[in-house]
Image 1 (cartoon, helix red, strand yellow):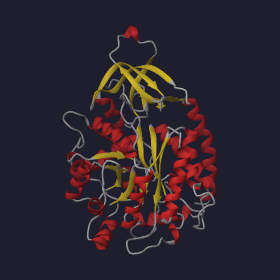
Image 2: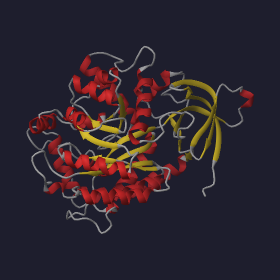
Image 3: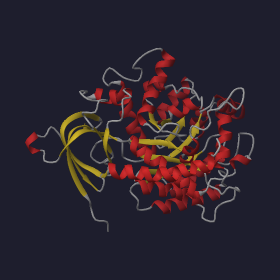
Image 4: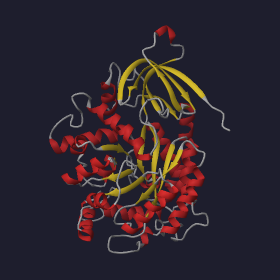
Length: 468
């Protein structure tokens, strides 16, 4: 039987839940934590009762909802024009080339570097949308979880929470039942997919910092019959698991879906499957007004990746309309051209400003833009991976960041303006401490891990990009 671990600390101020559904900024806050879960929050303590005060401001850490870890290995290497009109689809060709010979150890080195960078940036968990399953030949490894093991090991070694999302990937488009040569490492039969999920579930048992979900790559990559069979499998094997899917990222995908099904991707999802709070629809960039309302009403989270969506020329998500309809959003770094939660949030807002010619688009009269963005994405990020994180409240995980109150980026700010400056003032990072699951991440240890990881990562880059 595991022995209980208890810890307690006081801090200068924090954004905490003071009543169900209400978060407020409070001073002189004491957190009591048992086995990584917040069990009590006391605030407005008299200064003479504070015995272990931390100078700083506590805010929830954020989930990185959507990651393809291996893509960190070639991030920033696709910025030459290869055709008269470069696009997502030409970028994809480089991705296929990069993964063609990637080994499990390579995948571990890349994921370890990435996850350390995520922790440094302030992310607490990662939703790892994992579709790199097979050997370079396209055949299964003797150990079917060989590649999944690499990312699980990387997450464990660096101390980030991971929601592993094994991906079903069966075809290259709506009008075929096969994958193309570049996708040979992604393809699985349904039986092999279910075996992989079962094996991954065994690997994470007993680890409070790991969970398992299900994922479909996209509507073009799986049939409706395969989705329904997987949902049936879910009922008997992983009833509480979350489900992720790419949808409506590219305009061409919308056109192909219309041609194949007579419906746009989001509408097809809503009409065909039981979309609810356990689903996370990644990107959802191209929606009409009916789809915006439908996805909002479903309770599903839209997993947004603003820097990747910009890098790939996807388009701009209709965030203002979606949030006004009651929709829920989270953020991820996807292809990892940026591993900076503040930049994701900043460009989520800036995209709305650029298309609407307005300022403070996603803020409200009650909540500043930074506060609205941060609180929404923190809480919905937890929902997207099925973990009670993203809010400093009793019963939630103690996943938090401590901002240095005297850092020039936020000094002399109070209440919501702390988050406004944290996000919109790009003047260095004020994060001074990180707690994940009730355990402090030692800055010296993080720095040393990054130093060691960099050596292996740079050696790998030299192998793949020598002469580039």
